[in-house]
Every structure is written in C-alpha cells, then in structure tokens.
Length: 263
Length: 306
Ligand SMILES: Nc1ncnc2c1ncn2[C@@H]1O[C@H](COP(=O)(O)OP(=O)(O)O)[C@@H](O)[C@H]1O
Ligand SMILES: [Mg+2]
Image (cartoon, rainbow over all chains, first blue to last red; front, side, top):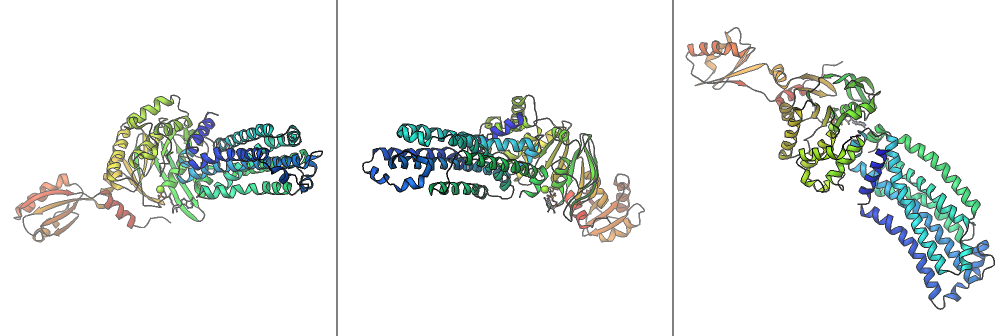
C-alpha cells in the first residue's frame, strides 16, 4: 500500500509538471463548464433571443424532454441536456492524457526498468498508475459538473431547471463517468504498451469518445431519449468492458513483457 | 554470492546468453566484458529477476532466481544501462521514491547519506534534468545503494560518459569496493575492468574465459622480457636461443624479445650470457600487454563450443 501511494504521488508530481497534461486537466473542465454558462447568460440578457429560441420545431426534437413547457423554455432544457452529455467527454479525455504520459513517458526516459527492479509487484505498479489517472479525472469531472449545475440553477427559470435535472444525470455523473474513466485508462495502458509517442497513445485511446459523440448526436436529433434505463444499460456495458480490459491490462503488464516487447 | 549454471536466454531462435556458468565470491568485484550485443544486459536482467531464463539456473545471495524473485529484488541493487531518472523531479525526490520502493526504514537518513557521499547534497533540490551526465550516473548508482544491497549490478556505468565524468564514477566504484560489497560490473571498457576488477570474464553469448586481469594477460601471451641492446640485436639471437629456458626469441632492430616462464630466475643468466658475448645492455624490461590486447585476441578466436 505504501508503494502504491509512493508511485501515485510520484506520478502526480511528475505528470503535472508537463504543461500539456496540466492544461488538459485544468482547462478542459473549466472551458466545458464556462461555455454553456456563458451561453445561458447570453440567452437571459440579449434582446431578440426570445424569438430566435421560440421555435416550435424544437418541441419535436426535444420530444419528451419538455412536456408542458413553452418552446422558449424547451429550448433551454434541450440545450442543457446536450451540454451535460458533453461533460462525459472529461472522464475519457483526462485519464487518457495522464496515463499516456505516465506510461509512454516512462518508456521514453527508460525509467521503467529501474522501477521494475524494485520489490514493487506489477499489480501494485499498475494499480498505482491507474489510480493516478482515474482520480484527477473524476475530480475534474465532478468539479466541472458542479459549477455547471450551480450555474444552471442560478441562470434558468425554476421550471426549466426542474425539467432538466433528472436522476439519470446523477447516475451519469456519479456512476457512469467513473466507470468510463476506468475504461479509458485501461485502454490507454494497453495502447501505451504498443506505441512510443504519448500523443499517439492519447489520440488512439481518445477514440473511446466516439460512441459518446454518437450519443450526443442521437440525442440532439431526437433519435434517442436519454433516461434512467439507458443510463443503467450504459453503466452495465461500461462495467463489463472495465472488467475485461482490466484483466487484459494486468495480463499485458508483466516485467518481461514490458522490458522486451514494449519498445 | 552469485552462482549460475548453464544459464540460457533465447529470443525466438536466437540465443543471447548460452549456457553461462559462473561462480562469484562474496566481496568480489567481477568484470563482465563483452562487445555490444554480447548478452551482458540480458545476463544482468536475468540475475535481477527482470526477465526469466529460458533454461539453466542461477542463485543470487542464496536465493533462487525464478523462485525467490522478491527476495532477490529486495537484496540487490542495479544500475540499468540508461539511468532512467525522473528529470522533472529533484535529486532528493528521485532517491526518496526509490528508498520507499525498496522498503528502506529510515528514508530521509539514507537519502541524505548518499547525497552527501556523492557530493550532491547542495544540489538536492534541483531537478535532475539540470544535472550533467556524470552527476546523473552517480546519482543512479546512489539510487541503487539506498537499501544497502550486498550485491550490486552495474551495467556499463561509464559508456555514455566523457573521460572526466568516467573518472568520477570510477573513483566512486573504487570507494564501494573497499566496503565488502559484491559488484558485478558489465563493461566494454577494458581499462575500467583492469583497474577495478578482481576477476574478469570475457563473454560473447558464450563464456570465453574467467580469470584475474593479470593472469589473463599471461595466459594469452605468456611473460615476455625485452632487452634493449646498444646495436642490432640480430647477432645475439643464436646465443639466447641456445639457452634451455628461453621458449621463444625474436629480434627487432636493437631489441631482443624473449618468452620466459620465470623471468625472475632466468634474467640474470641471460644478462650474463649476452654480456659474455659482447653485447651492451641498455635496459631490461617486462613487456606488458593491456587487457585490451588480450580481449581483442580472445575475440578473434572462435568459441570452442559445439
Ligand atoms: N527483447 C529482446 N528481443 C529480441 N532480442 C533481444 C532482446 N533483448 C536483447 N536481444 C538480443 O540479445 C543480444 C544481447 O543483447 P544485450 O544483452 O542487450 O547485449 P549487451 O548488453 O551485451 O550489449 C543482442 O543480439 C540483442 O539483439
Ligand atoms: Mg547492454
């Protein structure tokens, strides 16, 4: 346990000195939180916005999202829903950046070999690397979501907020997002074992975002309705993938494999 | 301290280390000499339980490689081929991380001890990335010693260093030598092996020879004595050739080069015979070959293996 903590604190000390990683962990969440709030603020202030938003078409797209709301409020609910889905990008993008740099970086500087010569077990080492990537990602996601959530509550009429704030979003942020973080980290670990450039590892692993984007698009076109059932289903799928990928990552993460095949 | 028996590692079809059998005593500084690609790093990796042998066996400190790996890792130190420091972190942080991983009890005490010993205490808070290569290499050796291992493996400690930095590292290894540690030193620097090692092995996939540097020189060339004469040596060749203890004789300009088993006993007789024949002797000296000559000679010979 002591060794795991040693490695985690080393990862954080080392990886956050990398500007690229630092910015992606700090600024990506801030931007994702600030952008929608800025838009909401603009909606509530700018004259003439109302007619623009007062589009009955939106009612069709939004479907069940805003039963009993006028088109204007419905637009807001619709926008909020889209944005919150965007937050799900954080649990993928952040750990992938950290893990890619923490593993590929260590490969490049050849510091993995002296590390593997110590009495740390490979499972301890892998656990430490995964935790080091997962924890900041979850923290950043929650902080960004918290800011967005409070901002939305302050900037929108109560009816709109009530229509937007459904339990499935809590499920998404507190259950599915952490599971996604683990998934993305495992993929980054596996991909990192095969490439020598952290940027490539990052980009390949970030492909996990694609299914999420499909969700965003699907929802925005009114093709899918995101509700509790869908979230449970999603959570289940991601959990199953987590188990499989964790197993694979551990299998691949052996001293000899790392030293002789991780080139 | 380190014993291997037919230790072998193959990568696919290709043998990197083939049936290596060695016995290294407690406190010995053992040089492992070989050209690039000889399998030195592979041998160290097997002995430090980083990769598993394909066949054969090895014991380090009475622990069995492949069975007591965790014990071996706890009790040996290793300087890997590339030091692999965390450049963004300070020297102090680099060492304290490893002290913790090696389960050192008094982390701060040990880190301070080695930073001071290495002369890096003043620079302890600087990122290692700002250090010179020689300083990093010393720091990496210090990192391998934090847990006071009884066996130390050094993989080409000076190959990437300039002469000045090499000197720093050599002096440090020399200091360690006096402290009863067993050191396994991989190198292709023969001068280094000659100066630091009690015994050396010449190795290229197979073990060629193991002996003290002095005896290796002798084994390959025998002992040779040079007589510098005042004038051409050719004339005196028959005189020395007639002596029963001269195994071989050669004349080169004003020099006679003789191969002898026991120069201490026979040199006076040779001098007498030469003076008796009218030769003027200017100097007498033993011809010394460097380990490099020995090594190159051995590398030319093909291995005597089936
Ligand atoms: N992981 C590996 N896969 C395949 N071949 C390897 C591997 N590691 C080393 N070798 C081969 O084994 C031989 C010995 O390598 P190495 O032990 O690094 O030599 P040295 O350290 O003496 O320079 C070389 O021919 C090298 O190409
Ligand atoms: Mg090598």
